[in-house]
Length: 329
Image (tube, rainbow, N blue to C red; front, side, top):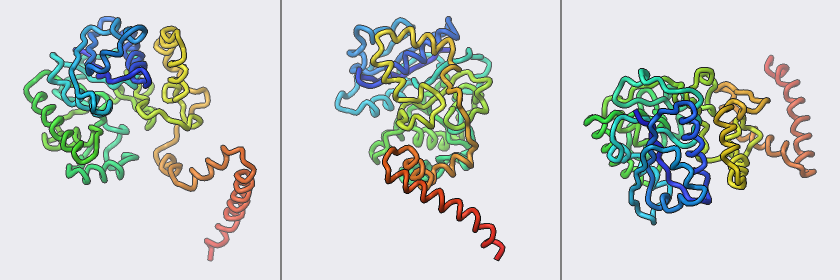
């Protein structure tokens, strides 16, 4: 079985560095693993000087000519939805914003197509249920009846059934693009519905989405830290690789291999010492605009913000004292 990475990158972004780190971690945990790298021709042109390093860790490279006028996001999703046609053999597709912490057990992959639910929960319980439901309906797709599969880690056998599934995924992704949605999970899950939920669940440990839960972290195979949209508000993050400042440091550091080797060999050191994880209900409550406003005031050094925060605190204490009395009436 192969590991497959899709890379669309230019020197100004950090997708190359994320993919390199993930591939290095795979080779460290599984020295004999076969790694395939699928990229567009524009990305291949940029693999010069230090950016050639990724080729030292890959066993197979496929370069596909794409429309240079398309955005990197569109080219990336095109390659992803077409990857079954370009790569031979069974493979485990892996997003670049990941880190291997334990080796694969091949016996865990028994079905033709396998994935892990987004958020590790049923769709109805997913924190972004309403967002995805609205988008799915807007696209004219069918919402999932059970799980909303995360597209970041997918096992795909080289069988006619899987080839047909992937062809349909690409077709429905193109329909999605025509309606202004260039992400691929909505079309992936719609095609899964059309195929009677052909995607079976692999162990959650192969796609541990740490922004949602720590339940599977103890036995994790692969940490998925979601670095595509790097988070600006770093005070709320517990994992270094989620932080924009980490990747800015990487871009400025001439000796990134030493830094990466430290991350690869000691991945759990990337967690902040003061890390805590809130439960689902608390995370929902913290998305309330009132909390966001208070948080903004608390971080501000402006005098008016401090005064307003003090007034709000006084009001909150007064409300807390009066509420039980008023509730008895």
